[in-house]
Image 1: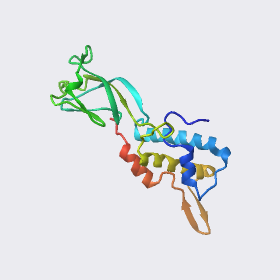
Image 2: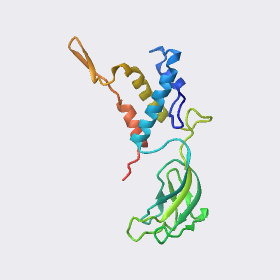
Image 3: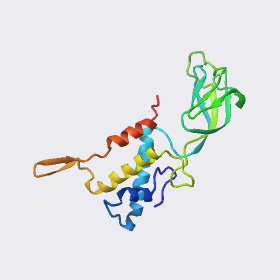
Length: 197
């Protein structure tokens, strides 16, 4: 097995986290890759977004006027085209790049974006690149706290793999519940989570 295109950490990072606590046999690398891929998919689902850098073409948005146009994926790396429509997407007009400023997650336009007359109809279309370079690639840019969250969740899955389906263990009157979603990991992921309506 190999790391998927959306893997948020690496086998070496997981090994580094376990150093001094557990010795991972070399044949377990394929298992760790599988767990990284599964955890990364789960994180993307939890956060309602993608993290790897990719191109988004002709993303149609409904705007209710105002100066800020929030894009569904971020951080925005570059914008190749912006078009607006005044007839619910029947025809599109190009918006010159001199009319807006690109921020991490939005496009700011001093003159404002078209108002769809109080209706949520398609009136802006954007093509852009967004996301981070992931740890498995050259010159990664993924925030370290996000990579650490993915690596920690992978470690949890690795260590509890033999306890699937169990909530905890009891021994001599002491009950220990397994923490499969640690609070610090959840707090980190919540900072990157997108609430979609």
